[in-house]
Each structure stands twice: as structure tokens, then as C-alpha cells.
Image (cartoon, rainbow, N blue to C red; front, top):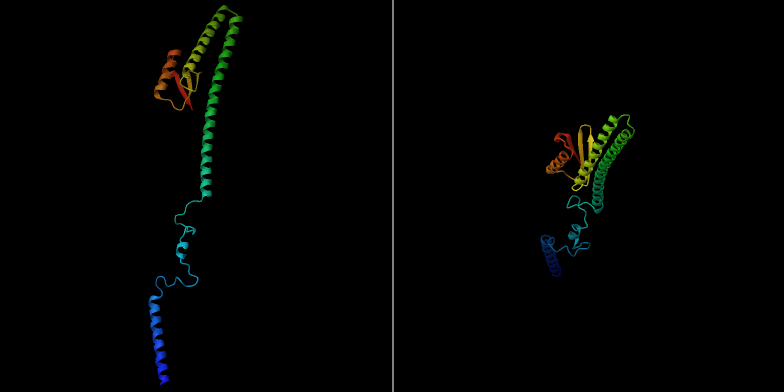
Length: 205
């Protein structure tokens, strides 16, 4: 009798274990049941996709170092361009100043030659012609000086010179408007009794 009861009890226990095992299999792997297992971190998902993870191609941005190098490179290129433009402008201005110096030297040389003829001429006719040319030269230099002084009211630098059969007016300005070119031409025509096709206007920045 006792053996039969023990057998029934063992069968009951086994049945209960089978039922519990089946229940665990169907419900044990769902949310929250593994939270207590050793080695499982409840914050694992959050940490894995957190900001410390370097995910290539996802929202990646250039490093501060790389950005700084590119910016420095761009600035260096801009500075080089600005320096080149400044050198070109300075070279053009130097040429303009040299043009004025050359003109003054040419007038001075011509004046000395005429004065020599006036004072030591071989004939009265030669001395008279030299004096007439000297007067014209002096008048021309005075007119040019007046024109340049007038142009300097509107421009940083201005030089008037004669090149073969043309008169060249060089002015330093960022840009030359059509009306400004017309005013320069009219000024030259009035002061030096020139035709419009005898005047060339040149600008430098």
C-alpha cells in the first residue's frame, strides 16, 4: 500500500514538474524574465547605441582637427591671393610714379638744351626759335601740372604723359565710370587743345 502511494506521489510530482516546465517554456523567455540572469545589464541596449559608439557613416562629422586644417588652408590661399593682388597694385603704382619721373626728366633735359641754344646760339634766328620752343614747353608743363592737380581731387594718383602722337592719362581708382572718362577727356581737350582720338585713359587699382 505504501509503495502504491509513493508511486502515485512521484507521478504527481513529475506531472507538476512537466506542467511547470511547459509553462516556463511558453512564458519564461518574454519581457522581464531575463533581467535577473547573471551577467545581464539592463542598460546594455542604451549603452550600445549610446553616443560613445563610433558608427561609421551614421551622422559622422569631420573632426575638429581636420576642420581646422582645412580652414587654415583656405585662409592661407586667400592671404596668398590678396598678397599677389597687393603686389600687382604696388607694381602698377610704381610704374605710374616712374612714368611721372621719366616725364619730368625728359622735360628738364629738353629745357636745358633749349636754354643752351638761347644763351650760346650761333645765330639770332636759332636763339629765337629756341626761346619760342622753351616758352611752349614751359606752358605745356604748367598745363599738365594743373590737369594732374584737378584729377587728384577725384583720384588717388594721376599722371599725364605724351607717348608718340597720343596723350595718356593714368589714374588710380577702383573703377572708372563712363561719366568720369568723359570728364577726363573733356578736361584734356580743353586744356591742351586736343581731339578725342588723341587721348588714351588708363586706370590702375
